[in-house]
Length: 436
Image 1: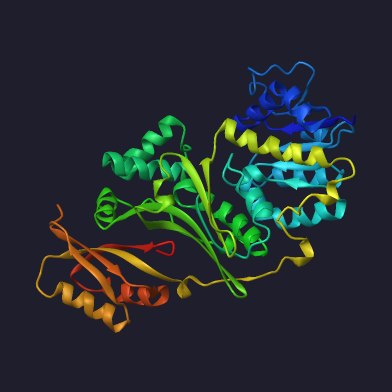
Image 2: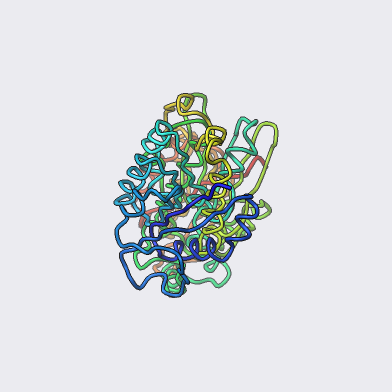
C-alpha cells in the first residue's frame, strides 16, 4: 500500500487541532482509506506553539520551505492564515507538485483564481472545505451533492462572532459594545474585531460560495459589505415586535449574466429556519431548481470542527492518489475553462423590503414630510410606527417599506436626512422573506 505523507504549516489553534487529529486518529483514517496516512513534518516559527502535542516521529521545522520542498511530502496543509506569506507558500508547494489543503478563506477569496489555474496546470488538487463554514461540509454539498441543480439562491450566517453578538443582544438586551467586550473575553472575537463585525470575514466566504454556486470567478472585492456595529437593542426589539430577527447574512443570487452578492444585517422572519441559528453557530441555505431548499448547520469555527474539515479534504486527496486525482471534482465545481467572468449585480438594482429607523423631532408635520419624500420616490409604506420619546428628546420612528429598488430608496433617504426635523444618521436594513 502506498503511504500518503502530510506536511503541516502552522501550529496555531487550528493547526494544533489538525495535527492532533492526524496523530490520534491515524489508525482510523488509514483504515478508512485502506492505506497509511501519516503526518510527517510540521512547521511553525514559534517554538512554544503546539507544546502539548506528542510529535514523536514527526519532524519539526522552523522553515516552511523545508516542508514545501521535501521529497517525502505528498500533501501540504497551509494553516498560517492571511494573504502573505500564505499565498507564496501555497504557490511554491503547487510548483513542486504538492497537493494543497487550506482553511484560509482570505487566501482563496483573494488569490484563489490564480492558485486554481496553477494547480490545474500542475495536475495537483487544492482543497479548502474548511475555509467556509468551519466543520460544515457546505462546499462539498454545493460542489457535489447539488451538482445537478441550477442554484437559485445562497443565504449564509457565516460568522460566529457576529451571530453570538446578535444573539446576546437579543437575549439579554445589552448594547453592541458591551457584548463585543464579552465576546473578546471569551475568545469569540479578536482583539481587533474589524474583519468580523464589519462583515469582511463573511464577504470572503460569500465570494467563494457565490462563485461555486453560479460557475463564476471569485470577486471578493465586489461584494457589497455592511457590518453590525450600528445595530442597537431597540432595533432588535422593534424587529421582534414586527415578527423578525436580525442576522448578519451573506446573500447571493443569479441575474442572467450577473451575480448579486451582498453582506449586511438582515431582518428575517422569526419562523424561518435560518432565524433559529443562534450563538456562534453557522448555517448555509442553498436553494436549487430541483432540490428546492437545503440547509447546512454546525460550528463555523474552532479547533475541532475546522480540523475535521481540513482532514476530510486530506482524505479525499489521499483516496484519489496517485492516479485518480483527475477524477476529483474541480475545486470550484466546474472546469476552469467553463467558469465565466460574470458581472456583479449593482446594489442600486437590488429589490428588497426595508426597515428604516429615523430619529425625528417631536413636531407637527414631521411624519407627513417623510411620507411625502418616500411617495415622490415611488416607495410604498407597509408600516409606520412611532416609538416612545428618546432620552435625547428625539422620537424614534420605524418605517417598513414594500419591495423597492435600492437606488430609489437611497435617493429618498438622501432627501430625508436633509430635513431639519431629522437627527443623526438613519438606519436602513433589508428584509428577506425566503419566498414566504
